[in-house]
Image 1 (cartoon, one colour):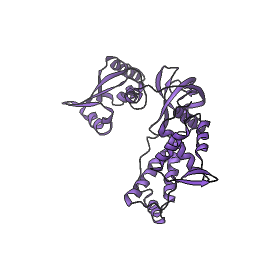
Image 2: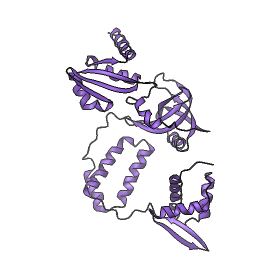
Image 3: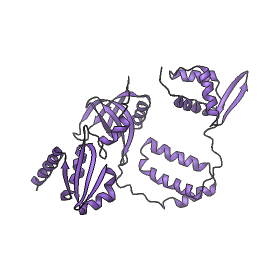
Image 4: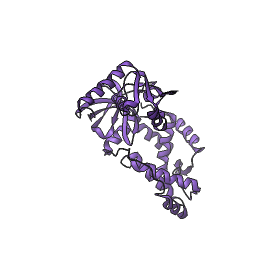
Length: 325
Protein backbone atom coordinates (compact mmCIF):
# COMPACT_ATOMS: atom_id res chain seq x y z
CA UNK A 1 0.00 0.00 0.00
CA UNK A 2 1.37 3.41 -0.95
CA UNK A 3 1.91 5.73 2.02
CA UNK A 4 -0.11 8.88 1.37
CA UNK A 5 -0.44 11.56 4.03
CA UNK A 6 -3.84 13.11 4.77
CA UNK A 7 -2.98 16.42 3.13
CA UNK A 8 -1.65 14.70 0.01
CA UNK A 9 -4.76 12.51 -0.16
CA UNK A 10 -7.07 15.52 0.16
CA UNK A 11 -5.21 17.34 -2.62
CA UNK A 12 -5.65 14.22 -4.78
CA UNK A 13 -9.40 14.22 -4.06
CA UNK A 14 -9.67 17.96 -4.78
CA UNK A 15 -7.88 17.57 -8.11
CA UNK A 16 -10.16 14.68 -9.00
CA UNK A 17 -13.35 16.61 -8.16
CA UNK A 18 -12.13 19.59 -10.20
CA UNK A 19 -11.46 17.71 -13.42
CA UNK A 20 -14.98 16.61 -14.39
CA UNK A 21 -18.20 18.66 -14.25
CA UNK A 22 -20.23 15.42 -14.06
CA UNK A 23 -18.86 14.82 -10.58
CA UNK A 24 -17.76 11.74 -8.66
CA UNK A 25 -19.44 9.57 -6.05
CA UNK A 26 -17.68 8.36 -2.91
CA UNK A 27 -17.39 4.99 -4.63
CA UNK A 28 -15.73 6.61 -7.66
CA UNK A 29 -13.21 8.40 -5.43
CA UNK A 30 -12.54 5.19 -3.52
CA UNK A 31 -11.84 3.33 -6.79
CA UNK A 32 -9.51 6.08 -8.05
CA UNK A 33 -7.50 5.94 -4.83
CA UNK A 34 -7.28 2.15 -5.07
CA UNK A 35 -5.77 2.48 -8.57
CA UNK A 36 -2.93 4.36 -6.86
CA UNK A 37 -2.72 1.59 -4.28
CA UNK A 38 -4.04 3.94 -1.56
CA UNK A 39 -6.39 1.97 0.66
CA UNK A 40 -8.71 4.01 2.88
CA UNK A 41 -12.33 3.36 3.85
CA UNK A 42 -15.25 5.38 2.52
CA UNK A 43 -15.87 7.05 5.87
CA UNK A 44 -12.36 8.53 5.70
CA UNK A 45 -13.12 9.89 2.22
CA UNK A 46 -16.32 11.47 3.57
CA UNK A 47 -14.34 13.14 6.36
CA UNK A 48 -11.84 14.42 3.77
CA UNK A 49 -14.67 15.97 1.73
CA UNK A 50 -16.16 17.58 4.86
CA UNK A 51 -12.74 19.02 5.68
CA UNK A 52 -12.25 20.33 2.13
CA UNK A 53 -15.73 21.90 2.10
CA UNK A 54 -14.55 24.35 4.73
CA UNK A 55 -11.92 25.86 2.42
CA UNK A 56 -13.16 25.06 -1.13
CA UNK A 57 -16.40 25.28 -3.09
CA UNK A 58 -17.54 21.66 -3.19
CA UNK A 59 -21.01 21.05 -4.65
CA UNK A 60 -23.31 18.08 -4.08
CA UNK A 61 -25.75 16.89 -6.73
CA UNK A 62 -28.16 13.99 -6.12
CA UNK A 63 -28.87 11.93 -9.24
CA UNK A 64 -30.40 8.48 -9.50
CA UNK A 65 -30.25 8.02 -5.74
CA UNK A 66 -26.50 8.82 -5.56
CA UNK A 67 -24.60 11.91 -4.44
CA UNK A 68 -22.06 13.36 -6.90
CA UNK A 69 -19.40 15.78 -5.71
CA UNK A 70 -17.67 18.47 -7.80
CA UNK A 71 -15.21 21.24 -6.89
CA UNK A 72 -14.81 24.75 -8.29
CA UNK A 73 -11.49 25.42 -6.58
CA UNK A 74 -9.75 26.46 -9.79
CA UNK A 75 -12.46 28.75 -11.13
CA UNK A 76 -11.35 32.40 -11.10
CA UNK A 77 -13.66 35.25 -12.03
CA UNK A 78 -13.30 39.03 -12.07
CA UNK A 79 -10.14 39.24 -9.98
CA UNK A 80 -9.20 42.78 -8.97
CA UNK A 81 -5.57 43.66 -8.25
CA UNK A 82 -4.13 46.76 -6.61
CA UNK A 83 -1.42 48.72 -8.44
CA UNK A 84 1.39 47.34 -6.20
CA UNK A 85 0.08 43.81 -6.83
CA UNK A 86 0.12 44.35 -10.61
CA UNK A 87 3.66 45.74 -10.44
CA UNK A 88 4.63 42.65 -8.41
CA UNK A 89 3.13 40.38 -11.10
CA UNK A 90 5.23 42.19 -13.73
CA UNK A 91 8.26 41.68 -11.50
CA UNK A 92 7.48 37.95 -11.17
CA UNK A 93 7.22 37.58 -14.96
CA UNK A 94 10.68 39.13 -15.30
CA UNK A 95 12.09 36.84 -12.61
CA UNK A 96 10.75 33.80 -14.47
CA UNK A 97 12.40 34.60 -17.82
CA UNK A 98 15.68 32.73 -17.11
CA UNK A 99 13.68 29.62 -16.13
CA UNK A 100 11.60 29.18 -19.28
CA UNK A 101 13.62 26.10 -20.24
CA UNK A 102 12.27 24.32 -17.15
CA UNK A 103 8.80 22.82 -17.00
CA UNK A 104 8.32 24.53 -13.62
CA UNK A 105 9.30 27.90 -15.10
CA UNK A 106 6.97 27.60 -18.07
CA UNK A 107 4.10 26.43 -15.87
CA UNK A 108 4.62 29.33 -13.44
CA UNK A 109 4.59 31.77 -16.37
CA UNK A 110 1.39 30.24 -17.74
CA UNK A 111 -0.22 30.39 -14.28
CA UNK A 112 0.40 34.14 -13.99
CA UNK A 113 -1.06 34.70 -17.44
CA UNK A 114 -4.09 32.60 -16.47
CA UNK A 115 -4.57 34.90 -13.50
CA UNK A 116 -4.34 37.92 -15.80
CA UNK A 117 -6.83 36.39 -18.24
CA UNK A 118 -9.38 36.41 -15.41
CA UNK A 119 -8.84 40.05 -14.54
CA UNK A 120 -10.09 43.24 -16.18
CA UNK A 121 -8.89 44.74 -19.46
CA UNK A 122 -7.59 47.76 -17.54
CA UNK A 123 -5.40 45.54 -15.37
CA UNK A 124 -4.01 43.76 -18.43
CA UNK A 125 -3.13 47.11 -20.01
CA UNK A 126 -1.48 48.11 -16.73
CA UNK A 127 0.70 44.99 -16.89
CA UNK A 128 1.71 45.77 -20.50
CA UNK A 129 2.69 49.27 -19.39
CA UNK A 130 5.02 47.98 -16.67
CA UNK A 131 6.48 45.09 -18.69
CA UNK A 132 10.08 45.92 -19.47
CA UNK A 133 10.35 48.72 -16.90
CA UNK A 134 12.07 46.34 -14.47
CA UNK A 135 15.30 44.89 -15.81
CA UNK A 136 16.85 42.00 -13.88
CA UNK A 137 20.50 41.14 -14.52
CA UNK A 138 20.61 37.47 -15.50
CA UNK A 139 24.13 37.41 -16.95
CA UNK A 140 25.27 34.94 -14.29
CA UNK A 141 22.38 32.59 -14.96
CA UNK A 142 22.96 29.39 -16.88
CA UNK A 143 20.71 28.52 -19.80
CA UNK A 144 20.39 24.76 -20.02
CA UNK A 145 18.68 22.45 -22.45
CA UNK A 146 16.56 19.93 -20.57
CA UNK A 147 14.92 16.71 -21.66
CA UNK A 148 11.27 17.10 -20.45
CA UNK A 149 10.92 13.33 -20.04
CA UNK A 150 13.92 13.15 -17.69
CA UNK A 151 12.63 16.19 -15.78
CA UNK A 152 9.22 14.52 -15.38
CA UNK A 153 10.74 11.19 -14.24
CA UNK A 154 12.87 12.98 -11.65
CA UNK A 155 9.77 14.74 -10.34
CA UNK A 156 8.03 11.36 -10.00
CA UNK A 157 11.08 9.83 -8.28
CA UNK A 158 11.23 12.68 -5.74
CA UNK A 159 7.49 12.56 -5.09
CA UNK A 160 7.30 8.77 -4.72
CA UNK A 161 10.77 8.28 -3.13
CA UNK A 162 11.91 5.69 -5.67
CA UNK A 163 15.50 5.11 -6.77
CA UNK A 164 16.63 5.95 -10.30
CA UNK A 165 19.42 4.63 -12.51
CA UNK A 166 21.06 7.38 -14.55
CA UNK A 167 23.74 7.78 -17.18
CA UNK A 168 25.54 10.93 -16.10
CA UNK A 169 28.13 13.05 -17.91
CA UNK A 170 30.57 14.03 -15.19
CA UNK A 171 31.73 17.67 -15.09
CA UNK A 172 35.27 16.83 -13.98
CA UNK A 173 36.19 13.92 -16.25
CA UNK A 174 33.68 14.58 -19.06
CA UNK A 175 32.92 10.86 -19.13
CA UNK A 176 29.62 9.01 -18.81
CA UNK A 177 29.07 6.96 -15.67
CA UNK A 178 26.15 4.74 -14.63
CA UNK A 179 24.84 5.55 -11.17
CA UNK A 180 21.94 4.64 -8.92
CA UNK A 181 20.66 7.70 -7.07
CA UNK A 182 18.04 8.49 -4.40
CA UNK A 183 16.57 11.84 -5.57
CA UNK A 184 15.72 14.05 -2.55
CA UNK A 185 14.81 17.41 -4.08
CA UNK A 186 15.37 19.85 -6.95
CA UNK A 187 17.68 22.83 -6.48
CA UNK A 188 18.47 25.76 -8.76
CA UNK A 189 22.07 26.98 -8.89
CA UNK A 190 22.54 30.22 -10.86
CA UNK A 191 19.64 29.25 -13.09
CA UNK A 192 20.73 25.64 -13.65
CA UNK A 193 18.28 22.97 -12.52
CA UNK A 194 19.93 20.32 -10.34
CA UNK A 195 18.70 17.33 -8.38
CA UNK A 196 20.13 16.70 -4.92
CA UNK A 197 20.47 12.95 -4.45
CA UNK A 198 22.32 10.26 -2.58
CA UNK A 199 24.72 8.57 -5.01
CA UNK A 200 25.32 4.86 -4.39
CA UNK A 201 28.48 4.98 -6.53
CA UNK A 202 30.11 7.73 -4.44
CA UNK A 203 28.35 6.77 -1.19
CA UNK A 204 27.55 10.43 -0.60
CA UNK A 205 24.96 13.16 -1.26
CA UNK A 206 25.73 14.96 -4.51
CA UNK A 207 24.21 17.65 -6.75
CA UNK A 208 23.51 16.39 -10.28
CA UNK A 209 22.90 18.95 -13.00
CA UNK A 210 19.80 17.72 -14.81
CA UNK A 211 21.09 18.72 -18.26
CA UNK A 212 24.04 16.31 -17.74
CA UNK A 213 21.75 13.31 -17.21
CA UNK A 214 21.83 11.44 -20.54
CA UNK A 215 19.23 8.78 -19.63
CA UNK A 216 17.14 7.87 -16.60
CA UNK A 217 15.24 4.73 -15.58
CA UNK A 218 12.96 4.61 -12.55
CA UNK A 219 13.57 1.56 -10.35
CA UNK A 220 11.15 -0.33 -8.12
CA UNK A 221 13.22 0.12 -4.95
CA UNK A 222 12.16 2.84 -2.51
CA UNK A 223 14.34 4.93 -0.20
CA UNK A 224 13.97 7.12 2.88
CA UNK A 225 15.43 10.60 3.26
CA UNK A 226 17.79 10.81 6.29
CA UNK A 227 16.21 12.62 9.25
CA UNK A 228 18.99 15.21 9.48
CA UNK A 229 19.20 15.85 5.73
CA UNK A 230 17.37 19.19 5.60
CA UNK A 231 19.35 20.57 8.56
CA UNK A 232 22.81 19.54 7.39
CA UNK A 233 22.86 19.43 3.60
CA UNK A 234 23.13 23.16 2.88
CA UNK A 235 26.10 23.53 5.20
CA UNK A 236 28.03 20.83 3.31
CA UNK A 237 27.75 23.05 0.25
CA UNK A 238 29.76 26.26 -0.10
CA UNK A 239 28.01 27.76 -3.12
CA UNK A 240 26.98 25.03 -5.55
CA UNK A 241 28.89 21.86 -4.81
CA UNK A 242 28.54 19.55 -1.83
CA UNK A 243 31.44 17.80 -0.15
CA UNK A 244 32.05 15.27 2.59
CA UNK A 245 33.36 16.14 6.05
CA UNK A 246 32.55 19.60 7.41
CA UNK A 247 35.39 21.69 8.80
CA UNK A 248 35.88 25.18 10.15
CA UNK A 249 37.26 27.36 7.36
CA UNK A 250 39.02 30.55 8.48
CA UNK A 251 40.25 33.06 5.90
CA UNK A 252 41.85 36.47 6.45
CA UNK A 253 40.99 39.17 3.88
CA UNK A 254 42.92 42.44 3.56
CA UNK A 255 41.16 45.82 3.70
CA UNK A 256 40.68 46.21 -0.04
CA UNK A 257 39.24 42.71 -0.55
CA UNK A 258 37.16 42.99 2.63
CA UNK A 259 35.06 45.74 1.03
CA UNK A 260 34.08 43.38 -1.76
CA UNK A 261 33.36 40.50 0.65
CA UNK A 262 31.15 42.65 2.86
CA UNK A 263 29.26 44.03 -0.14
CA UNK A 264 28.70 40.83 -2.15
CA UNK A 265 29.76 37.67 -0.30
CA UNK A 266 29.05 38.23 3.40
CA UNK A 267 26.08 35.84 3.32
CA UNK A 268 28.52 32.96 2.65
CA UNK A 269 30.05 33.32 6.11
CA UNK A 270 28.80 31.95 9.42
CA UNK A 271 30.70 34.74 11.15
CA UNK A 272 32.79 37.75 10.10
CA UNK A 273 35.18 39.38 12.56
CA UNK A 274 36.52 42.88 11.91
CA UNK A 275 40.31 43.25 12.32
CA UNK A 276 42.80 46.09 11.99
CA UNK A 277 43.95 44.66 8.65
CA UNK A 278 40.51 43.77 7.23
CA UNK A 279 38.22 40.90 8.22
CA UNK A 280 38.38 37.28 9.31
CA UNK A 281 35.88 35.09 7.43
CA UNK A 282 34.63 31.98 9.30
CA UNK A 283 32.47 29.21 7.82
CA UNK A 284 31.75 25.56 8.68
CA UNK A 285 31.56 23.69 5.39
CA UNK A 286 33.17 20.95 3.33
CA UNK A 287 36.43 21.60 1.48
CA UNK A 288 35.67 21.31 -2.25
CA UNK A 289 37.35 22.36 -5.49
CA UNK A 290 34.74 25.11 -5.68
CA UNK A 291 35.87 26.57 -2.34
CA UNK A 292 39.50 26.54 -3.50
CA UNK A 293 38.61 28.35 -6.75
CA UNK A 294 36.65 30.93 -4.75
CA UNK A 295 39.67 31.64 -2.53
CA UNK A 296 42.11 31.83 -5.45
CA UNK A 297 40.09 34.52 -7.24
CA UNK A 298 41.09 37.00 -4.53
CA UNK A 299 44.82 36.45 -5.09
CA UNK A 300 46.99 38.14 -2.47
CA UNK A 301 43.89 39.62 -0.87
CA UNK A 302 43.04 36.31 0.85
CA UNK A 303 45.06 34.13 3.22
CA UNK A 304 43.84 30.74 4.51
CA UNK A 305 44.37 30.37 8.27
CA UNK A 306 42.57 27.06 8.81
CA UNK A 307 42.56 24.11 8.12
CA UNK A 308 46.19 23.37 7.29
CA UNK A 309 45.41 20.96 4.43
CA UNK A 310 43.34 23.68 2.72
CA UNK A 311 46.34 26.02 2.97
CA UNK A 312 48.46 23.36 1.26
CA UNK A 313 45.92 22.84 -1.53
CA UNK A 314 45.76 26.59 -2.24
CA UNK A 315 49.57 26.76 -2.21
CA UNK A 316 49.84 23.84 -4.67
CA UNK A 317 47.35 25.49 -7.04
CA UNK A 318 49.31 28.76 -6.95
CA UNK A 319 52.60 26.95 -7.62
CA UNK A 320 51.05 25.08 -10.56
CA UNK A 321 49.76 28.34 -11.98
CA UNK A 322 53.16 30.00 -11.57
CA UNK A 323 54.80 27.21 -13.62
CA UNK A 324 52.61 28.17 -16.59
CA UNK A 325 54.34 31.56 -16.71
